[in-house]
Length: 447
Image (cartoon, rainbow, N blue to C red; front, side, top):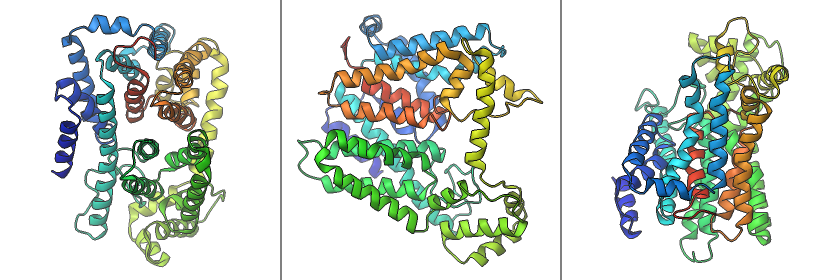
């Protein structure tokens, strides 16, 4: 109820009309980090609204010279054409994972104002903080045995491991949290903002706390890389402050018990052929690190739970990093056979579904994914999207979204190295929303 009143008060003070177009934009920004189902429904309503809206043809004409929109359209056209030589004959199920980025031009055609876009960013932040608040409350209620399971939180991954969970996958959410920190930093460093900075600083500490106490390796790495770059470009005189903060952050991560530290230890554990007792002891140490309590207590608890014990005994060491390199090697070898055109749309899914094939899982790397399916041509068209974004950002350094444009584009370029984020629903919706908010403008042809 408080959430609702704050948001409506925000709209009232900003003199934003409560139109269907605005409601869809604001709810989409809010639910990206909360519900895939609701986000999907909103995307459908965007299409319906597009057909009902007046001046659609005029707005389309005004977008013809937008480099980001053109880059996206060229890429999608090539993706569609690649189905002609693909080994996968299921076009519609394959194109679905790429088609969402077409909502960048859709949102641009709906012609939102600068003020409406700024409000939608605030709704995005509300969605992220809703995850954090719900995570803390539900986790504590579960710890105190008030509730018997983590209701509403995503709990189908690392079931027997403690960490602060959100409504969506922990890795995707960590990217949103990291980017939220930079959004709030933009508010703090605005020259016209003289008061309430302490409130924004508290919000940044809350976001950072969540990154550490969730499995947010991706988001934390992004923040550690981009934080110094951001301050070096925007406020070089304050670079010492951010370096000190990052040093403090790393110290807290290393010297305090938290799930992230335990996860890093587990990731880089190179021991092989561990005995059953050693595997159980390692998992017990992990739980003790993450949740507290005596190691013997966790050893006993694991031994009493047959399902948990079986999972621990079947767990291989160094799974995450080692397996990822193995997957990349497999895909690299396959790419050489279709270097120029690629294997075509949906070919990875087809190979995964086939038995007795060395390709049995997604590449966990967006660049390999694109190169494998669409070859050199598709890969260059894909990179052109991000080149266009960087070009617009660099050519317009006085734009009030200059730093967010840079951080957003670099965020995606980095995180796509470690997962298929360009086809994962949450992250591609995030890409779609902010590409539209940051790189298309109302009634303008050139940015």
